Length: 125
Image 1: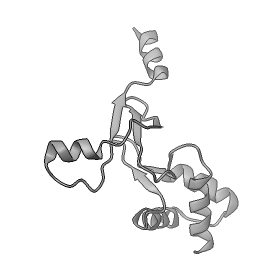
Image 2: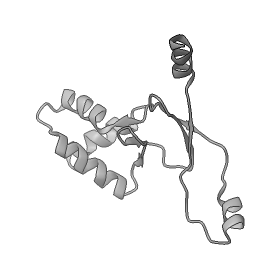
Image 3: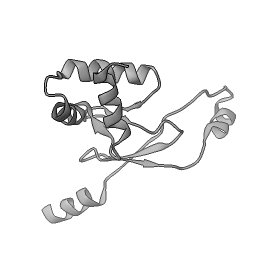
Image 4: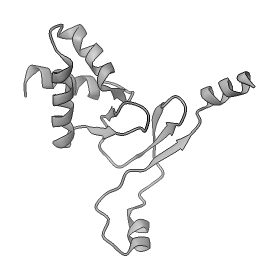
């Protein structure tokens, strides 16, 4: 593994947040000042394709990267894009029964308005 790839992987693994490529770039640059955005994106793509990290797509916001590979789901705020893990159990068997097909995997993103954004909405009224 190249030094750059290891640095990017370690940043994702050591974060409790679901960071965007830009956030990863900022942290990587502190340790490796000459690293460029293209290196970040290329390595995030590689790490995702190899199944070492997980990309989470958030409509209207940059993709985020997740260190957690075991099956779990996400709560996504429709206003600020805040992303957090949630585990609601394995739905694979139920989905197979409903579709009549073998399900090899799924991603479930639950959309809501987070308490912070809900509070700000009340203040604006």
